[in-house]
Length: 419
Image 1 (tube, rainbow, N blue to C red):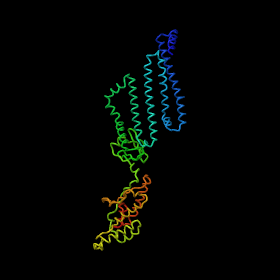
Image 2 (image 1 turned 90 degrees about the vertical axis):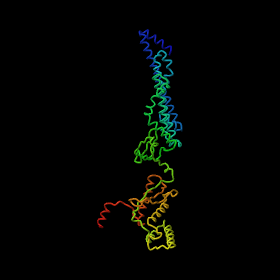
Image 3 (image 1 turned 60 degrees about the vertical axis):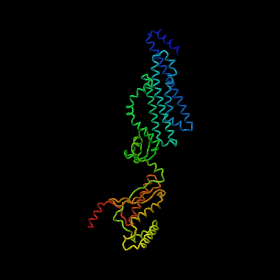
Image 4 (image 1 turned 180 degrees about the vertical axis):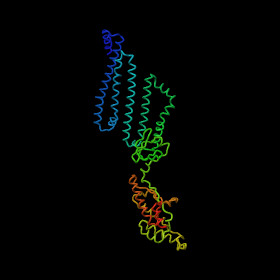
């Protein structure tokens, strides 16, 4: 090709072209030839290299190469083939166009850097998909790490491209960027906060993909879909999606329900309100009626014997119910509810279960049911809790107790009739 340049130059001179136009034509022809070689390499990359890779991946049993193929890693590698063609033949073809060579090679370098950055980004995405299939990494914020690598990758690429365009060393550019650090910190504030938060969330295992979280300040209550460098996507139970800044999980309080899901039960903690004026000592008629209830029959008899013995030993005048020791209807009701929870197959009695009184309110005396459902699935859990309280509301009248309810218009009309 070196020998071709001079005869071609002489040929043009002999046909009446000036030296200026002869140089222009010769350089143009050589540039066209160089780009033809580049196009040839591009064709070889697309038709041969890519087809071979596709056939190879179809025959392998591993799905790792399929992931690289889906993320178009091999296709993006073929984008480097035109640059390879230019690098291989530029010394030979551009020997007579040396004044153009720095510009062509510079443009090729910029193109190569951009393509390499794109390839690395696709490789990072493929590695993320591969690691996501592995059990140790399945619930880790891999997207955050991949995005961090992308930022570093493209950051280095931008620095290299700018250094080529201004014909300065990358180190010179980095030193010049020191003055712009404050601006960069402001621009990438969310990314920096997100990176710090992602590291803390991962190192302390505070949140994983698939966790049920509640972030009240952002109205998020549902399952974590994705953890990225800047945001955490939460699919709420109404199927809406809330995007929460990653650093919000560090700066604000949130509730992670993973502990409940990994435990032996899901907590039920709910109170009913007993009307104060329905609370009284249990007379013999009530005790005799409740002795027929299987799950507290033995308890009532034991307690009755204990109280009778105490009253006899202390010579208590039992003609008045307030003297000595007596059972109350609300106390018997509490004992009944504890026995009911103990015998309920849906309640995990290996965990804490109790019925307790809370401080009285304007709505009456609260009796709180505290226990754990064996089932943790939301729908089943709600069904179990509803069944428990259905039974509680229905059984209260058997103890001569009334559940508090704010008076309605019907109550006032009834009162008016009575008056």
